[in-house]
Length: 249
Image (cartoon, rainbow, N blue to C red; front, top):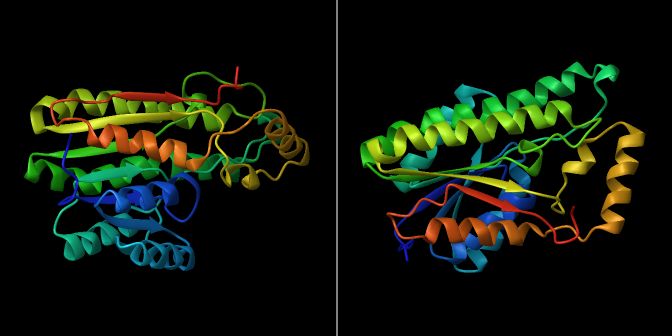
């Protein structure tokens, strides 16, 4: 099992859901965690929780859609921790709507955060991992990055398909050459705030109705899977993790 006690992790989208759950779990496992998001008041509350539990956390205000914000945040983490051994690209949005509604602002937000955010953060951290000749990049894709669910999910699925493809290509390029592991996490339905971002009343009702008939995964379920991938022996790369509720078809 990989010893984690001397390692540090940068987690984006850490202010809620999967990101916050993963921060708690990794901190409990002994990692120093840099928790990044735009909502710093939530991050400060999470930091206090982690510190009270005996962990080590550092707050980073970061907008992953802006490279300058990402680079500034990564510099702050390096000054605080001296290394970034694990990068968890988790920030994401999912305002679903049918294409013919032409909610272009929402499309652009998904592209900027779900896809460009992964590229920006990876680009900022990768040189550090290359210098260290070690590291682990984990990217949150989705079951929607394996199949298009249907009306409303098209642009979201497009961004997640891209994250899945980028993860596989990144693993091929940096694994053997730079001793960097890459894991693509593909969750099914998880009880997070994602559904709250949908403004279309009909789609929002569909999401709420679905949660009433399917027992969604908890964010801790995904965090446990992430910890498993990180703890794997250094010569083992858990390349993909596909997790979904037993009730989800």
